[in-house]
Image (cartoon, rainbow, N blue to C red; front, side, top):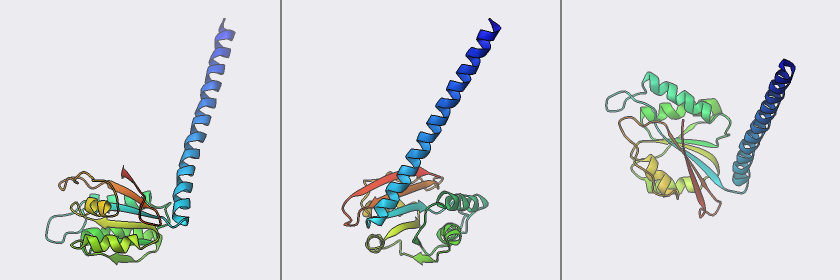
Length: 185
């Protein structure tokens, strides 16, 4: 009886391990397919925008990032590290520049400025770009800019404590077809 139970446990463990390996392979395969789809889309002239609000900030007129904000900026850089960005846009405020700098430094890119008071112009400039582009903005500009790029209406960002939204807006080469994904980082 013990020999039968041991054999049964061994078979169960083997089956579980096999199932786990198959599951992991399928997950990695799906992830690789998604990356290939994004790369294929950009190769076909589509552009991919990564829009975020700046990380956590101190108080004041033009504050720098808090220690938590600096960690969040590094986390964003880590999240985007496998994405070859072509440009990084930011507004001309310390908190947005510091958030963007963490990513730009890792990818050896210069920061490009845009005017948050003229989002229509910013969207026009962005839609004429190619590749993967990070845009760092504010609670009152990030969702509005996503919508100007063609995304559906987005929920308002909570100004007090919401710093982790990452919008991925993919626009075809003709600026007609748009897909939007909202992630948290």
